[in-house]
Amino acid sequence: MMRLAIGSDHAGYEMKQHLIERLREADYDVTDCGTHSTESVDYPDYAAAVGAAILDDQVDRGILVCGTGVGVALAANKITGIRAAQASDIFTAHQAVEHNDVNVLALAGKIVGEVLAWEMVKAFLNAEFAGEERLVRRLQKVAQLESE
Figure 1 (cartoon, one colour):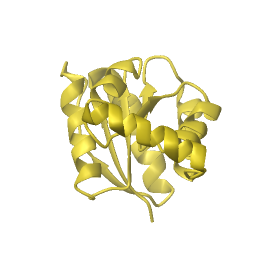
Figure 2 (cartoon, rainbow, N blue to C red):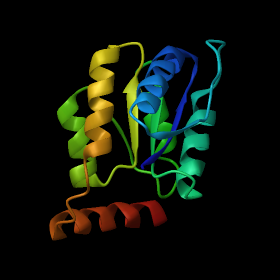
Figure 3 (tube, one colour):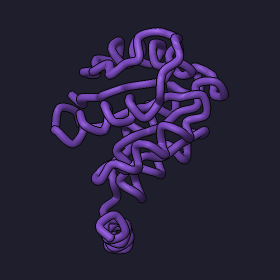
Figure 4 (cartoon, rainbow, N blue to C red):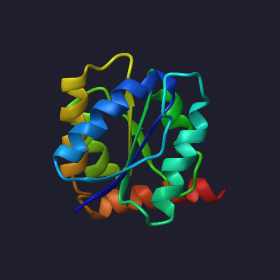
């Protein structure tokens, strides 16, 4: 069973709650990293919590939600070892894993509807890194940028 961490700021709270319910119905092991209400909070805190859960090997992948998905993706990508992609369509959600070995999906809670968000999450979770030489080479270059 895949273990997941999910987090959001206040703008993504309702979408996060919907996704947690759907994920648990689908028998995923879900860790809710907060927030726990629609009261205004800072998105980097929740990106950090999801990133830490991945890096500490508590979970396999993460999902983050804010109003646009941009803020949480930006914050998560500052964490060495986290590769987050903001997606607004199903193709991007699975392609990000297959070609870029993304371990965090960032969603727009105020833009994307619940049905599309769930389809993107399923695509993200069912995708596997293709591992082709060209893709590995490119990720090595990304890792080099992180270390510079």
